[in-house]
Amino acid sequence: MLSKTMEDALNRQINRELYSSYLYLGMSAWFETQTLKGFAGWMLVQSGEERNHAMKIYDYVVARQGKVQLEAIEAPKAKWSSAGKIFEEVYAHEQKVTGMIDALVELAVREKDHATFEMLQWFVKEQVEEEANAATICEKIKTVGDVPGHLFMLDHELGKRK
Image 1 (cartoon, rainbow, N blue to C red):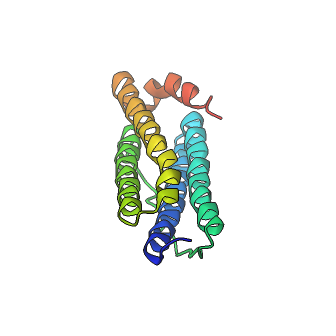
Image 2: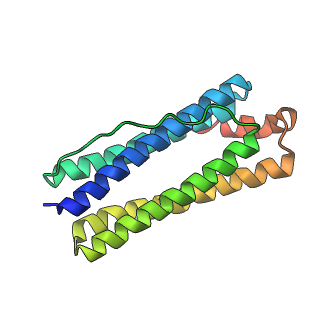
C-alpha cells in the first residue's frame, strides 16, 4: 500500500504527464499550421507517449490500492516563432520532467518504498532518452537552419517516427 505522501506525489506526476501530452499535442497543431507534417507527426507520437507515461503511473497507483486524483490540465501555449524555439522548449521541458522524476525517486527512498523506487527506474531511464532525443533535434535544426525550406529533410526524417 502507498503512503498518503507517495500517493499524492504520484497523482501530481500523473497530471504533469497528462499536461506534457497536451503540450506536445499543441505543438503538433502548430506544426500542422506551418505545413511541417513530419514535425507534427513526431509531436503527435510524443503526445501519445506522454499519455502512456501517465497511464503507467495511473495503473501503478491502482495496483497499489491507491486512489487516482485527476486535476484540471492547464492549456498549453499555442504559438511559437519557429521549429527551433519549440524544440528548445521541448528540451527544457524534458529537463524539468527529469527533475520531477528524480524528486519522486528521492521521496521513494525517504519513504522506504522499494516497489515505487523500482517502478520509477523505468522513468529514470526514459528521461535519459527523452532529453537526448530533444537535444539531438535541437542540434539538427541549428545545423540546417531554422527556416521552413531548410527543414524539409529533417521534416521528412521526423515523419518516419511511429
